[in-house]
Image (tube, rainbow, N blue to C red; front, side, top):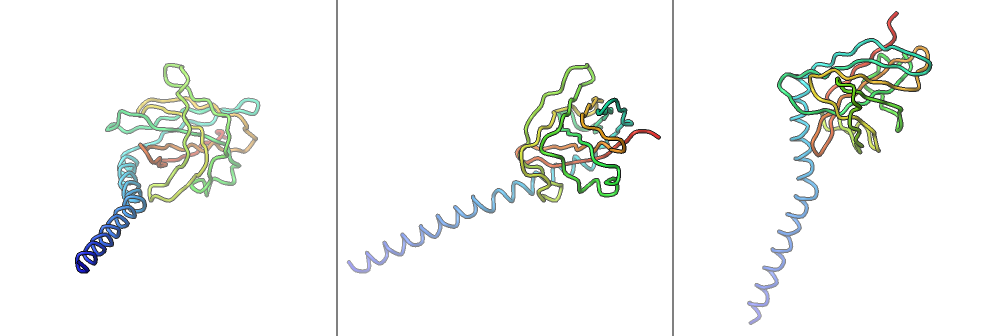
Length: 182
């Protein structure tokens, strides 16, 4: 009878250890695997995507430009944001993050406003967190020019444009900037 009790206790310990390992795997390892997998998908899309941007046209504290996210292999949508930074930031534009609020309006090729959405976290293509907080972005189609209108322009500013892609996790797949033509 004593051996049976010891065997039941041993089985209970083994089951508890198994449950702990499974719980650890699901809560820690699985999200990392999903993040890495989605980063690879975003990286593949980024490698085949080209951003075309027009000059920044300004008028009384606001600016507008035309942007096209071109990837002939894609038919879906990407998210886009734009914000102003001083021209002195041009050399480090890849490191600049957007303000928590911006006055951005995005219009599709047919003149209708693009659908807005809120992003909570944005990662780079290596899975590092670029932005943590609520970020208002706009959903725009691949392969179709859109017009961006941004308020808050100061003379000498450049408009920084981020293009993001993701399903679950959001990744910045491209960025560019444009300024007033000289």
